[in-house]
Structure formats: structure tokens, C-alpha cells
Image (cartoon, rainbow, N blue to C red; front, top):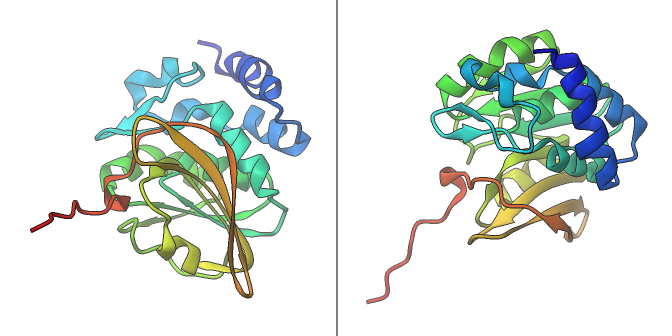
Length: 209
């Protein structure tokens, strides 16, 4: 399979047509080998409009949704970013000139994506999603959805930092952008999306007595 040709088709038919106009972002998407971020036997599906499995049920977000989240972040060269459950997004941000750390909770997922992340110059950490690695980030992004506002992730941002994620508590979800200010956090809704929800970022059910 000609993966370079497939990347161009992906950018032309899935990304540009969905109002992703940032040329630096488009260039990064054309350069990052998405096929290296999924299970080897699923590489042929990496450029389709599907959520491709990485390992143990974890999946890549569709490329158009990743691109729209990154564009909403207004990522700038030299900024620091945490890609939490977002290995492909982390590689794209690194191609855009950011200093990126990719965090995974499952070592099996990191075994798949780690070599490609290393080639992109992305630092890697294995640890629970409820506890972000370090703090003071300019950006945080996730390719998976969360069921509730990720306050632990917001705490890991510097003032002026941004998070782009999908919030989902049912069959439908909504991509949102959080911006951390001196006096609190603002929230703006972006677009509809429904990637799988991270179990670790889902509250335990409450039982009434």
C-alpha cells in the first residue's frame, strides 16, 4: 500500500473539506505516518474514516476530528503539550514544532505507538490518565472522550493554557475547548464527535439509598 498517497487523500478528502485551513497543520498531517500508530494488522485502515484500534480496545480518533481539535488549540511552535491518550495527535503537534509528552495508561498501547513517537521526538510516559505527567503545559489534547470535566488535566495547565477534548456521557459527544485564565476556566463548544470514552475518566455510578 502506498501510505504517502493515502495520507494525501486523507488530508484532501477528510481534513481540508472540514474547514481545517492551517497550512502548518496540514503539512504535519501529510508527514506523520498514521499507519504506525495502530495495530500492525490494521495499518491498511489507518487512512479511512474509522477509529482504528491500537491495542486492548484503545482506538485512534478519526483524522478529521484530530485536525479540528488541533486547529482549535491554536498551537504555536515552541509551546509545551501533553497528548494524553492521543499518540497520533502528539506526533502531529511535534511536527508543528511543539515540545510534546505523550501519556498512556496501558503499556500495551505504548508498545505499539512508542517507536513512532520516539522517531518524532516525543517524550513518553506510562501512568494513569487521572494523574497527568508534570504540569505547566500550554496545551493538552486527547483523542478519547471523557465523561466529565477533566479537572485534573485543567490543573496541569499554566495560566493561558488550552485543552481540546470531547465530552461524552451518552451516544453523542461534543468537542470542547477549555482556556485557563487567572480567575477561572472558560469553555467553548466546537463540533459533534463521539470517540470511545476513557473508562478511567468516567465517574463511578452513584446509588441512592
